[in-house]
Length: 149
Image 1 (cartoon, rainbow, N blue to C red):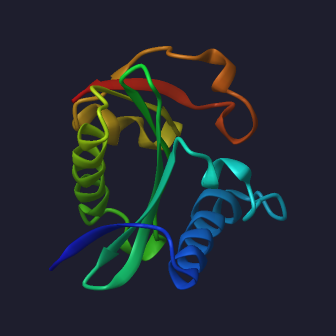
Image 2 (image 1 turned 30 degrees about the vertical axis):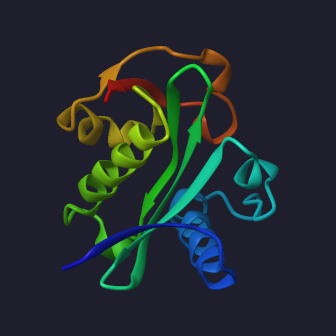
């Protein structure tokens, strides 16, 4: 079993990236017709969109937003429904932490879905209100958490 966390650049990877996010973070939660494939934040200078592949097959996504103050935000984390509960989220988190460190981050933040809080606690995150302004739209019921890396 081989994991690769790749920076999303080519059209096929962008397609897989958007398909996974749309399905798992929006449509699976009853949010139809609101996902924006052209959101400017995905292409901003601070944004690092990643696709997790298992033996070459796309199974997960996230975007790491790196800020100049040594913090980074782990955003829009998704694993395909068929692959959830198999440890892939832990693998992706470990790989993203390595990337964040390489990009100069020492602290990670996340707006965790209520159903994911247990996962984050089990992987070393703690609840911490880091920016209440973030808690809007799809993050309105999220729990803000942090982790030192």
